[in-house]
Figure 1 (cartoon, rainbow, N blue to C red):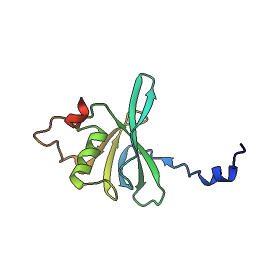
Figure 2: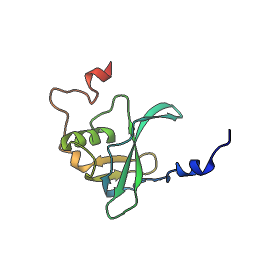
Figure 3: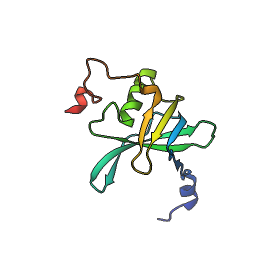
Figure 4: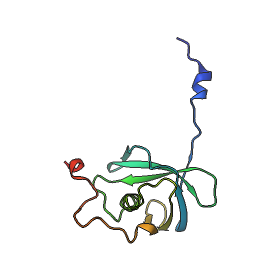
Amino acid sequence: MERNWKNEVSELREQLEWLNLSAGQHRVVFLDNGAEKRLVQYKDGTGYKVDFKVQQSGSDKVKVWSVSKADEPTSRSLWGQLSLYAADQGTLVGKEVTVLVKGEGTSKDYTIMEAISLSLPKDQKTLIPVEESV
């Protein structure tokens, strides 16, 4: 069977650039609530990533922000902060947050300033719902 290359080309999509925030303070707008988590292979094991389409304030360029999601995320992790903020707001779509970045390379620490005052509900000890933790 012969492949129809014109059809293949019509199905291609533009590769989005990865968001790479330098140390400092940045404003980021979320364009979606993130893609389904994907498994990632690291030197010392595996983990999960969730990709968000975002724009930095003042830019029209859409980029992908890949956020790690641990098996047991904490409320201080980037994933935890985004989860608390999204739960408080009802969504991330269209929300603009201030991201404080400390460190460089693979040793960056992220703080979502809008999530600082948020915390887990008093009756909840984990970010993992009971039915998912089994």
